[in-house]
Amino acid sequence: MSLNQYIRPVTTERKENLNIGGCDLMELAQKYGTPLYVIDEATLRGICIDYKTAFAGCANIKMMYACKSLCTSAIARIVEEEGFGFDAVSGGEIYTLYKSGVEMSKVLFNGNNKSRSEIELALDLGVGRFSVDNFYEAELLNKIASEKNLKADILLRVTPGIECHTHEYIQTGQIDSKFGFDLSQLDEIIGLIQKQYKNLNLKGLHAHIGSQIFELQSYSDEVEILVKEIKRINEKFELKLDEMNIGGGLGVKYTSFDNPPSTDELAKAVVSVLKNCETDISTIYIEPGRSVISTSGVTLYTVGSSKQVPNGRKYVAVDGGMADNPRPSMYQAEYTAEVVNKSDDFKKEKITIAGRYCESGDILINEIELPELEAGDVLCVYNTGAYNYSMASNYNRVEKPAMVLVNNSHSDIIVYRETLDNLISHDNIPDRLRR
Image (cartoon, rainbow, N blue to C red; front, side, top):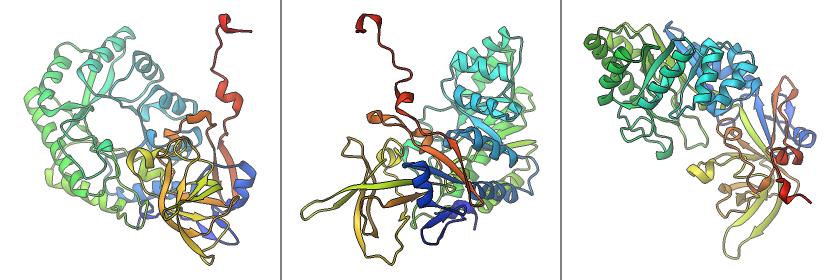
């Protein structure tokens, strides 16, 4: 069983209160305030080790952490220490990696609408690969690289025509997608690269089929399609493309109903197809994000008001919600939670956990059975390491939470809580409105 198949961080235990990383979560809430993101370092490193162990028999596999799931300086340091490269999708992520001391040749720049300034930054900082998404980007990247007298090593992102069974908003490999070249467009873009775009050095193909994927057959199909297409391109255009990026997307266990494959099962599926294809591809990139960081993260909330609807549900409100975790509102995502300061021995009731924001849809968890909650109790929501902080907003002009890293009974701030002054720091009153 690999750690992406756990709901809770591996160090979770209940003493007087819930503990993670040897730290009492009630004490963390009191020390740092809530809402509070908590990352368990042991779980994060453990999942990285799971991936390296699973693919140990395939020397040409390179792990690339998908930054969009959670990108902070401390997380980047830990993941690089564990031997991962990085898949970045913005100038902000690239700059974060650079300032964190990451070796930039291990970074791949992905995304469907890279700006000129982002491309210039990536070239100036020595990013190792660009995943070129469309005709416009190929022309722009070639122009900027030519101006800088550089050659950019690139992969072409393609849509392999695979629809995996996940939420439609996080499917990316189907034909009707905003991402990548259709396979029927590859000959045209390769022709342009060979004849006109002399500052682009084509190395291979890149695909990403989606996120929160439970079906291993989707990966097998993807690898088979990419290998076949690379062979066809090499023969037709007399090239020697030998790199293939299969993206990420492996699912995690948010609730007891989820049954994601293990990292071992993913590795066996990928390696099996590669052996059957007898490919000469020298480098295969895989880009896990959610499955690396999600299980290591929890979010702590303090309970406030409650409301019993006559002949209906009971709502219990917490001091966070859709601004620090938009996934339930966006994707109907489901979570598992426990009360930090009350064990299962307490009398239970079925409630709905509501957020504090001015939206009826600000519901974190629908109808969960928990010990009876009172104002001041602290709730721990599991598996919030991915796409919570990274998608957080200042909706209702509320400050974003802090983030702490816990390990061996020690806690460290890795993202400071925003202050009210932070919120208005970029505001400006024109002179004509000043009093």
